[in-house]
Image (cartoon, rainbow, N blue to C red; front, side):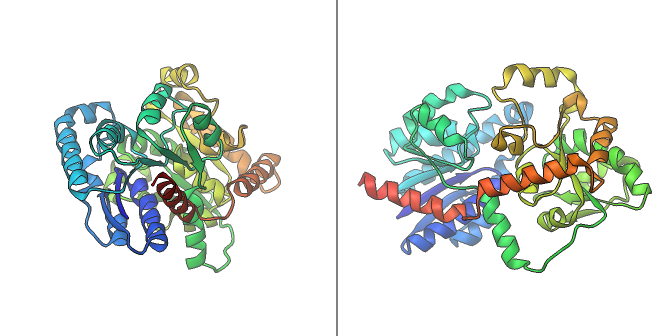
Length: 376
């Protein structure tokens, strides 16, 4: 079969590359075309039509400034879809681009099945988009356990296929089977966007400075797609703090505790069982926190708490994510005997049990092929 995938971020490139390998294992005749990145290219054996770096615009202002370029790329991908004549189109996360350029074109112009991999988080915001999903998407593949009921109850056929973070952990363990011990290390995971680094990293560094002076090793986990130069403007007087790239899982496996900017990294840290404080400063404005509390449809903003449906890990949002408050909470997670550390470790063990140990990419591939055979 002919598969056309659309991914617009580093995480989508990673998850889609695993899906491509799984599809190839199930369908030896598979051929692929895609918007994505280097990992998808390695898995598919063909270059991306457009590399996701070309659409890496963050924030409303940046998107508006580059709207012409985004539209041109959207039309380019549509033309490539038409020329490739896929048996199925698979959008991968990246909702704004996919909703605008991919879903309606694939369904109305190509009359092609659409299977959405990694559904947009409509349960948190922009719930009205469910109408577009119902209209244009034949099957949604969910990577969070609670999403299946949410989308199915709203009329979208949905299957839970596990989480790619579990796949990544299993792969890492297979490649690094040696046992490790927790070290006197505090890990900072300040996000992958410049705005996240600007708002969160200085507060994280200030919060851990006291432990650094006591001999603790403070390490920044460098995000894929960034370089040391991206971090330099935000280090201030902590410019000697090491930034380690390419082994975030190894660091999560060894660190004693972590400060993590909200996002997929919170789930990754949870799966590695590292006690954490989740931060999302957003400029440190109180109005941002009030807007979240009043406008968003969820009680938590970290994936760990959303999946467990309780405040298992502490969350500090906007004006509350300042160094004094971070340090106050972090200091309770450092002592081995503190009940707040042991309670969180128990919750993270429950998270790992809930997420399971079965790789998601093969499940996703089987769900895609099952639907396509059924639809014939």
